[in-house]
Amino acid sequence: MKKIILMMVIAGTLAGCSTAAQRQAECQSQGISKDTCYLAEHNRQDSINNAAMKQAMENANEAVK
Image (tube, rainbow, N blue to C red; front, side, top):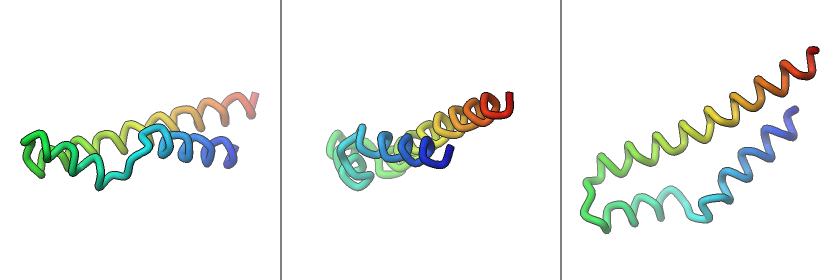
């Protein structure tokens, strides 16, 4: 199960193929405020973590059955 979570985190990281700093800079270059870009990045990370946690919980429930 730990391997699955690790693989999901790695896949989520590679899916964007850019760093948080790159995404922040790109967001700000569009004229969006720094605070809004920071909030968008934070929400992005939260959604990735929530999806990984949901999948981990489903996998744990399947293992118990």
